[in-house]
Image (spheres, rainbow, N blue to C red):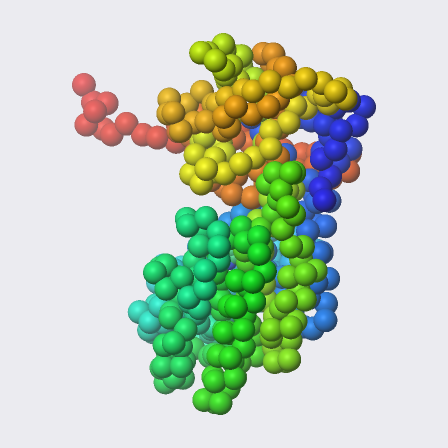
Length: 424
Ligand SMILES: *Cc1c(COP(=O)(O)O)cnc(C)c1O
């Protein structure tokens, strides 16, 4: 459930008409609903209420500091995959002891930064990384809590670009080798084992792969404890999917996911961490755009929007579906017609939807891409020298720009012409 509803004939974000935001900020613009973000965070928190737990929001899904502040103030931890995300979480006031550092390629500089600033745990992804972290921590005279991300070789049954738990993926250490790796950690200075980490992929719409992975983690917990390791914490990753099309069969809800976690690992007495990103932010944001032209083509009409693949890359990158709705509420029984919905970027891939049934649309009409809150603004670029898409956060009847659209002057002044080109 989200808080984007038609009211008085027009789509609103909570109590704010999207027409008002479009008029004030211009389009394209991302609009997030605070109530929806908080609701989704709390659903996870409640789903794990049967035991000690921390819901660590996966910052990469939507990393604006205002969103991190909102979730952090509600009690969320953060899962970060870079120094930049760590700095964002800290800038949002999230204490280090609620920040988990994940990611396959942590650099020495990043390790030093988070160890100096404080971190809840570091999830190790490889043996070279484990040895480097040991050296850095020992040099800094600290002992860092670690888990090892194990790769359970489970098919997440999701898009291949976002499946991470198969043995051919770059992530984690093969689960069969885990005991060896934990034994080595015990011999290394600066590292202290606290648990196990797993994350098998994103946009999972079936609980079975989670169950398989968590069962393997439970077995490994037993084996590692028998080897003498203190396994107190299980980081079970993110990945629960969202309904991108209203017509979809709804994926499992956090409550059902929490029940699977309880069944598979609840008896182990561990603190459970999860790292949801998409489910918290995805349906809490939409991309508001306006129609530049309606162009008649051979056998089809094109809606040419002012939003493009640089603002929302998911359709081009993953072939992803987004529901696209008119901001003006279509009257009951309104006839629809098929449109190819495209952006103005010079790439055929800049196509959001083909033959999409929409009510008749004319130039300057506003449309909204639903379910765009996760992996939307964070993946935006300035390709075709299009200004980075701005972001707005709504809370009740309040709204604020949380990332302004840069001016063309700012964009150009960020770059520099070398002396040897400007001289003479
Ligand atoms: C991307 C990622 C997540 C979040 O995945 P969602 O599908 O957005 O829930 C969590 N943990 C790790 C390690 C990730 O890489």
